[in-house]
Length: 157
Image (cartoon, rainbow, N blue to C red; front, side):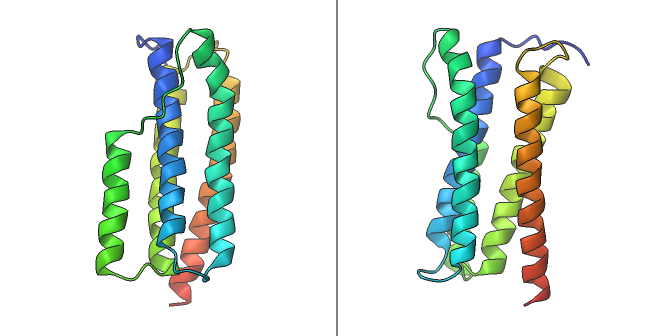
C-alpha cells in the first residue's frame, strides 16, 4: 500500500462525513417505518445510528487537534441515497423488507469507504489505523446483522 498523499484533515473529514451519512441514513430509515410497527427494527437502527455517533466522537479529538472544527456535512452520494430512500418509499410501501434493503445498501457503502481508507489511505504506521480497524470490525458486525435480518425478511414475504 502506498502512503496517501492526501492531507490528514481531509481523510478525517471524509471519515466524519461517512459517519454523518450513516447517522442520517438510519434516522431516515426510522422515519420510514410505519408508526408503532417494527419496534425491533427501530431499536436496531437507533443502536447503529448511535454507533456512528460514537465513531464520530472518537474521531473528533483528532480533527480538533489539527485545529479544525468537526464537520456536520454529509457526502453528496449520501444525500442522493437518502432522497432515493424517500422516493422509493413514496412508490412502494416502507415495509420491513424495503427498509432493510435500504439499510443493507447503506451499510455496504459505509464498509466500502472504510475499507478504501484502510487499504489506500491509512498506512500501517498511522496512529489512527487501529481505531479505524476496530470501528470497521464493529460496523461489519452491524452490516452482517442487517444482512441476516434482510435475508430473513425476504424468506418471510
